[in-house]
Length: 188
Image (cartoon, rainbow, N blue to C red):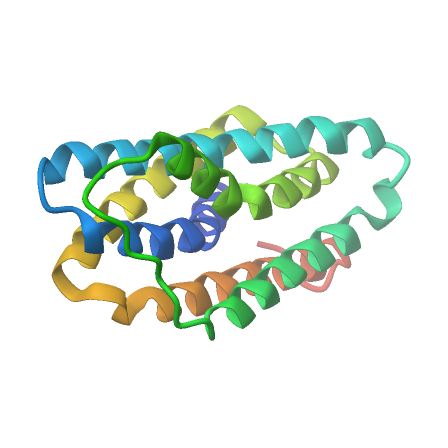
């Protein structure tokens, strides 16, 4: 898997964090840049950590499932993408008072990165270099989340659903790309 594909996976995975960051941006009144950094750091770290955990878990079974690994990656990415698109229909955004509740932020970071755990499992089947992959995913999520907080403060919830649909479509497309490449129908 090339760096561009990894970047697009990072973009797709970060859309849940982006949507959550928009919601967080709605409530920040004081120390905006500092809080934006903390929120983005939480999302970026967990979005990088979860694929690594998934990779480790998937590595246990990678050899046994090598003949169907591309199907597993396709199914996981498609399910995650479809779920993100389905969740985009929810027009909710819990706005809390202007404080960073670290427990709440930790739970939100874990919740928005669960999909990345499943993607990490598929990485094990694809036999990719995980260190660069998780770095790119974490950095991409950090940057996108940082902008999400800024957008939330400026524009509110209007972009939340579009971000989730875009992320879902990216993940579905990448799942199809992996399947088509491994079936020998496309070489990129």
